[in-house]
Every structure is written in structure tokens, then in C-alpha cells.
Amino acid sequence: MERGTIRFTDTTLRDSHQSLLATRMKIEDMLPIVEKIDSIGYHSLEVWGGATFDTTMRFLNEDPWERLATIKQYCKTPLQMLLRGQNIVGYKHYADDVLEAFIMYACKHGMDIFRVFDALNDVRNMEKAMEYVKKYGGHVQAVVSYSISPIHDVAYHVNMAKELQKRGADSICIKDMAGIMAPGPAAEIVRGIKEEVDVMVQIHTHYTSGMGAMMYMKAIEAGADVVDTAISSLALSTSQPAIESMIVALESIGYKTGLDLHKLKEIADYFKDVRKKYREFDLTDGTPDTNVLVYQVPGGMISNFLSQLAQQNALHKLPEVLDEVPRVREDFGFPPLVTPSSQIVGSQAALNVLLGERYKMATNEVKQYMRGFYGQPPGPVNEEVRKKVIGDEEVIHCRPADLIPPGMEDAKKGVAPVMQKEEDVVSYAIFPNVAYGFLEERLSRKTGVDYKLAKEVTEEGGKPVYPA
Image (cartoon, rainbow, N blue to C red; front, side):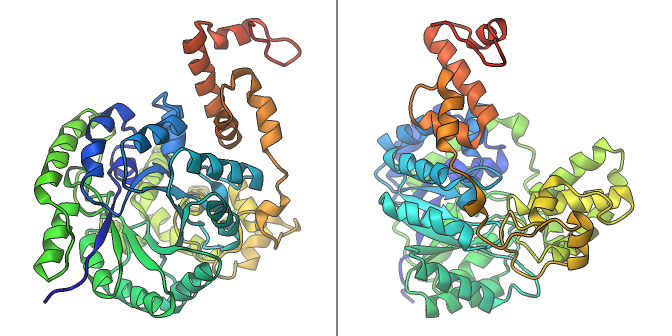
């Protein structure tokens, strides 16, 4: 039976290596193959966003803006990024002027499609990002973050998609960040959205649980238009399903893809060799982690628990922590476990177990969460827990970013000694410490002056004085 054409977004240059190789792939390992990837015929190439912005400066000594502009030179295929709504590419809310400047420069350097999400599915935290992407000519792909809880039924996900379309979404992405969406719910949600929303629907997952390809098949049968995949040599495990397998499976039941397996084999062989260069970060054993199905906890959270518990000589308490996570999540109003809410819930669950008393101590992030500074949780918060965490402190009910003063002017002053272009101000506004160190070193290479040493030698009145 002949069916329609299914399109694919390739994640190899972003989420794939973020998931498998700690986001460490360098631009020098991307450029030799970019034109070949561009020739495949993908719907889009995800090349930026998520953790790449931070990691390029912090570990790779690369300018994230230059990476984007360089990749764009080689690509006619639309480029795509993951934007954390008001969190931009960081881990907290930023001022609207910082968000607007980021999107403006991203569009200037060649970004086409912005996948915009919020960790709490609070549409208020997405609205400004969506507005600015429209303003500067980008495509808004608004995200419904998939989650499992008593309130996250099919109607919840469909209603959010309808709301996002009303607010200007050009397409909808159902984002299954933990790899926990089973084929049945995927089909129901996609079918429900396609009946109510007249835009393209894309599906994103991770292969962590081993269900990714099966889920994609049912989602496609229900009407999904595009799915996220990675090249086979950087697929599966915590990455995405393999593009080659999906092509053959779909074509075997009548779908068209228009993609050439022989061209893809060249790319797979190339990245098989590249992957060997990053062995120290390549820690997956390649097998499904079915803990994610039992505890609904993303693999990254479990890794964090192991590290945190090992530091306290308490690895034996891991089962207790995993049992505590759903209880904390319920107390917090069932937030989806995605950055940064996964870290907030996970850290508190570990503290509760390690201290032997629930909420005896709370992290600053938990206090801010309970005060409303991350946004409106999907469900009601446990008010007794909130009282224990923040006492009589005020809870805000507005959009959190409404309370954040503009940040670009202060950032421009702070980064002035090492600034070389306007984009540096945005980098500094989001990651001040990381960006400053990176920009300082970049300027030293350009001028031959050791700016870090100069600052230490000529510190006056708490302000650095640099050589002319």
C-alpha cells in the first residue's frame, strides 16, 4: 500500500553527540562531512542550541556564533536549534532584551527553525521567544513536552498544542526527552493534535528505553509528518533512532522517504571513525536502560544520582532516591523531567533521602521553584511542602521574566574589556563566567598579550585594567 512521504530531522551535529559524547564534538570533525549531510535531503539539520552553546566555550575553545555561521556556509538544508524558552540556552530565566538579542543574532548567522520549549510547559515562558523568532523571520516550532502523570493525559497534550498554534506556532513538536513515550500514547496524542491543529507535527525522542523506533512507527501511522533521527554510528542508546533503519522500515510498509541508503553509509562510516576520538566521553554501553520505564527518570538524572551519592559514600541508597523522585515530582505539581526541572526535582529527592527527613533542607532552586520563579507547574503544588520550604515568603503568579530588569546594558559594561563583537555581549549575558574566560583567551591569542596575567598584575580598585 502506497502512503505519504515522511521527512527527517538529523540530530547528529547536536543532540546525538550531546547525548552520547557529552557535547564534545569539535567543529573540525563536522566540516569534512557537512556538505555530504546537506546533500541527503533532510527536512532540517539540528546543529545548535541545547548544551552546545555552553560547551563550545567552556571545553572546546570555540565561539558558538562562529560555529553556526560556519555550518551555514555549507548548508542549503534548513538549520534547526533547541531553545529553552526564557532560559534561552542556559539554566535560568533571562531578561527579554537578552532573549531578543540572542534570537536576532541567531537568525543573522543562519538559524532557520527554533524549537522552543519550557520545562514546565508554561506557555508564558515561551511566548516572548516565539514572538521574537517571528519578528526576525524564523520558523517557530513550539514544543509540547511529553510527560506521564495523572494530569498529563491525551487532552492535556492536545490542548497545549492548540494553545501554541493560537500563539503563532508554525509547527508543533512532541518532545519525549526521556524516551518514555510508548507507541499507544504516541498514536493517540498525534491523532488528537492532527484533528485539532492544522500545522506540521514533528516527534522527538531518545532511544534510552529501546522503544523509540516502535513509537515513531505508530506516531507516523497516526499522522506525524517529521521525526528526529541520527546517523546509525551515533544513534540509539541515549541518542535518537537510526535514520537508516527507519528508512527501510517505513518504505517496507509503503511510506516514501526519498533518501539514499548508499549516501548515508558514507556518513555513517565517517562518524564511526570520528566517534573513536571521543572515547573518554563515550560512556554508554549501547543497551536500553529500562530503569527509565520503571522510574520515568531520564538517564542523565540517574548518572547525576550516582555521582552525588558516591560523594557521600551512599550508593546503596540509589533505590530509595529513585523511589523518592515521583513523590517529589507530585509535591512539585508534576513538572516534566527536562532541564532544568529534572535537576531541581532530582537534587531534592537525593537530599530528602540523604538527610533522612523530607525537605529538612531545600536547594535555592527548589525555593525559587516554590515561589513561582520558574513558572506555573502543570498541576497544583503540595502547599504543606511549599510552606516547609519557603515559609511565609511571597509566591509570584506573573510571568517570571516580567520581574527581570533588562540585562544587555550591564552585560556590555561587564564584557567591555574583552569584547570584540556585539554577539560577545549576548554570550556574556547568558554565561558570564564561562564567556569571559573564553573571550579573554581569544583576545590573548589575537593580540599576543596574556590578558589573564595582565588582569592579575594590574588589578586596581576591584576593576581590571588591561594594556592598551
